[in-house]
Each structure stands twice: as structure tokens, then as C-alpha cells.
Image (tube, rainbow, N blue to C red; front, side, top):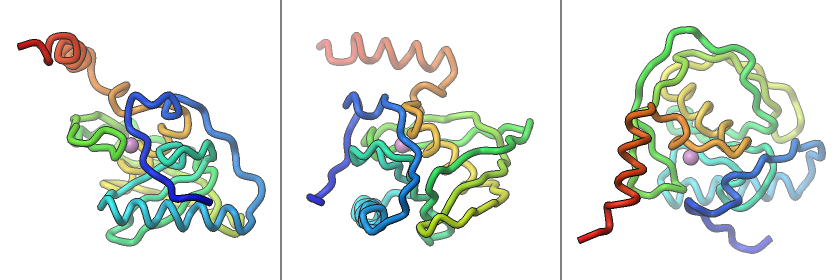
Length: 163
Ligand code: CO
């Protein structure tokens, strides 16, 4: 595999839906290794495979400075209670947006060997997990901002460069 690089918005690959992983082989381990290298190089706290051009359901999430890989991640339950928190994304350098998301989630995924993982997440890890799972379905954090903010962003795009 060649060196991977981060795909930046508006790269169309960021809008595609990723395929489920069903072979847990050396290639998968290599992809995950590369993703960990990239997230470290860029000091990120989360990364999804499509962000490096790979359309597979793989994400990396920072757990208190430990990078954890989740294959085929799914959100089983979301708390009714929501929380607003500022998010960034390696595919949108310099953009930070306040996004409202469920505060706690219950998740299911597989590890590198295909073993099932089930966890309850809250706080920053729940936040990152939800952001990264969105990427696997081509959903970006700019899609999750409120209507007024969306309008403001559209205006900025239209008129921002005019002098
Ligand atoms: Co992102």
C-alpha cells in the first residue's frame, strides 16, 4: 500500500457510503496501522477510513490518549439527552463548529481479529465515535449544524472571498 493522505472537503470520496469489513486479514491490519500513523502525524483525535480514501467501515477513536480501532462500528442506542460541543475534522482544516449530539451512546463493533466489542460511551469519546461513524455514511459535521449556522456558512462561502 502506498502512503495515504488525508482527503479534504469537498473531495467527493467523503460523500460515499463505506462497505462492511468481512475479511480480517493482513491488509486490514495494514490499513489500520496506516490510519494510526496518520492520526498521530496530524494530532487528530478521530479518523474514519474514507478520510484516507478507503471506503471501508473502519474508524479510529482517541480514548484518553489511547487510539482504539473499531471495525464495522454501530450505534445501538442514543441518549435522549443531548450536548453541544465544538468539533473539528481533519478533512476541514481550521474549521470548528458547535454541534449538538446525544450525550451517551451504546455501541457495537469488532476489533482487528473480528471479535465483538460492546461499550457504553459518554463525553468526548461518545462525541468522536458519532462523528466518525457519520463519515462512514458520507455524513459530515457541516451537515449537523443548526439551520441558522448553515445559512451563515453558505453566505460566507458565497461572499467571503469578495473584496
Ligand atoms: Co471528521
